[in-house]
Length: 75
Image (cartoon, rainbow, N blue to C red; front, side):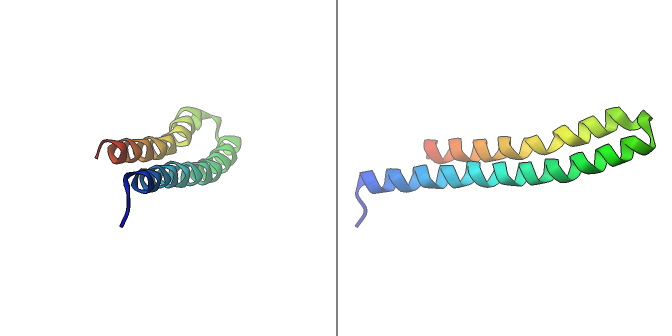
C-alpha cells in the first residue's frame, strides 16, 4: 500500500513532530522556570548559581527529541 517515497515522508514528518514537540515543551519550561528564578533572585541574590542551573536544565528535553529523531532515521 505504501511505497518508499510516502514512508520516507512519514518518517520525516514524525521526526519533525519529535523535534517541534520537544522544542515547544522546552520553551514553555524555560519560561516558567526563568520567571520563577528571576522572582527568587530578587528576594535572595545568593541563589544565582542554582537558578542558572535550573534554567538551563530543560534544554535536555530538546536533546531527547533529537535522539528520537536520529533513531527514527536509522531504523
